[in-house]
Length: 534
Image (cartoon, rainbow, N blue to C red; front, side):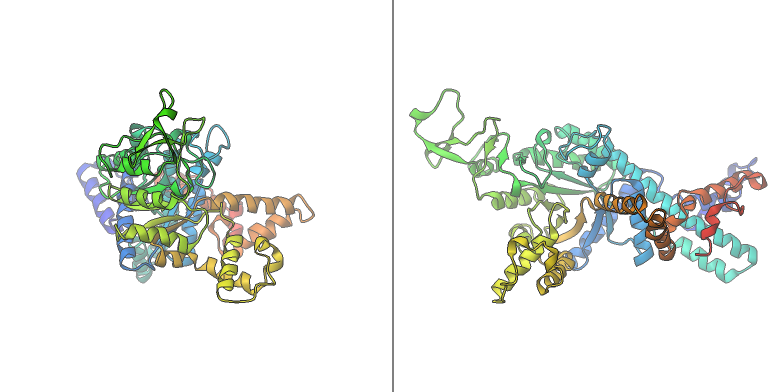
């Protein structure tokens, strides 16, 4: 990013060369607008954020405490407020990303209305949301920088040179709200050509990290529901290749591919791949199929059979035509999926698990690391898990292993509020609190995300407001429960006109029209001024 002074010199040079009739154009104003609009295109954003991802991955490889985090966002405003909050409370957006969840796109952004997580939503809604998120993040940059430029103008008018230098330094060292998005492309929305075309749209919107899963595209299910059907490795690798070619075509040479395996919870496959030699990927995939040994006389006409260890086997096939995997092969299939993906173009892994258990995640990842030592995981801290119950049960099992008396607890009912103040609940909560750091250290988790948090926060906060507002609290429910908290917490959105861009618009009007500008913010009739002193 260039400095304000370099932008100023650039505009002065352009004006001197071409601006014979540009007397009304002030280089200071043009330079200010250039600085407030650092990213011109989605590809600018993708290049910038891909470099961040690669640097963060390298830092994690050197020190596992430097893991990264994100929250899933279903609207640009939600993403914007998350990053504003990071800068407000922590002074930085470093190692904080945004997750774009296909589940939330289906549930909240489809023209069909609410849909399950089965890739039935319009594929174009995914790049559209990426573009929307980055539009809001860039607007957050413009707003914060606009406030700094307003202060700079006042300092210059007052002749306060020390303040001018301080503000120029803040402008030149401004940290953008634009951060990497890990974008969910589900199972690729079709064949590898469809995956390639959609990936390009997502990259052009700004995505530098694409997450793709090994389910059958037209039979895709949510990772935490039954009925998942995986594809042979060759099919999945073709889509990984499609994503990489899309990155390279668009000049994002260091774009990141996250290969997700759903094999831990998937019992079915749609097709049997063609094995060309013993021990190849296809034969390994086939070896996991559930089969029954039969005699050739038992074979039916036009039936598909498998020769295994010199014997004839009939694969277990459902009425749907899908083939069943053998029970107990899930973890082996996960490990093979992960190793194969990393050895063939993927940068990171995503293993969908049934529960958030550090030891169980580590068991799988450490097997992968025996072959690919720098394997890194993106982990779904999913709201589909009952975190309270899971960790209270883990604490209960720990107590049993340590020989502690657990007679006061019913393991099946540990979710009960009756246990909230117990030692077991306190131990469980501490395990939840440290889960991300523990998994980063012990299980190779580079990035922790919550897929659907803002879906739940929007529902909860709206329920709480409706409960009070339409009940006995009336208007106090909003004032005490929302506005007063915004004011006292210094939340920028309490001045919602400014957050939506009214101050930027006023300044642009003044730049464009001078004294003729009709501005909204200066008059005492503007009620937003009631918040000026708070």
